[in-house]
Amino acid sequence: MPRLRQVPKDQADPLTQVLYGMLFGDRDPVAEPGTASGTPGNWWTVFALVPEALQHAVGGFTFYRSPDRRLDPVLRELGQVRTGWARGSSFVYSQHCKACRDVGLSDEQVDAIPHWQVADCFDPAQRAVLAYTDCLVLQGGRTPDGVIDALQRHLSDEEILELTYIVTTYDLHAVTSRALRLELDDVDDPCREHPDLQGRFAGLALMDDERPDAES
Image 1: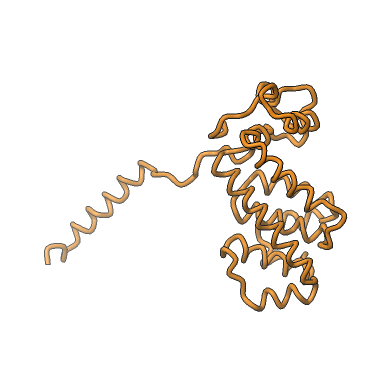
Image 2: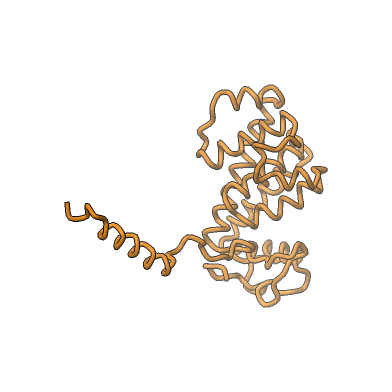
């Protein structure tokens, strides 16, 4: 379950109710969750807590899907899907795997997103976008000149700015989704103590004590 409360349809502001209607039809998405893509839909019902935040986020979706964008949708989706993988957001990654196929990327390319560095199914422009995405997401924006040089061989300054804005926006969504356990990111942290390891380490300590030179 999400870590924050969800907003039922009858408590939502008018614009949010319109969005609910577009996504969920006549259903109350809190009482009857589920989207067409197979997720619970609680990203929407939690963001509805602050209508201005929801409107701002929806504006971001409108921005990147606008026909006014100069950035090739294929390169855009590569940036978005790699953001989901790099940030560890199953929600962002899974949704944009589907979107990658919608814009024409092959199954081979989608399957290679996790190990793009050693895959030979991406062209130079695509590899530059993937490398830059890793700089933005995994290195906090620390980007070598060589990566920018590679981008500029294929993209205009305007396209690079659009890519930067879209990738960092989706990094925000990925981080938020994980922190609040929204949608497919409602999972327990895999990093935890394993009780059985205590005995193993104790055994190693005992072995150290039994070494011939243990007292010296």
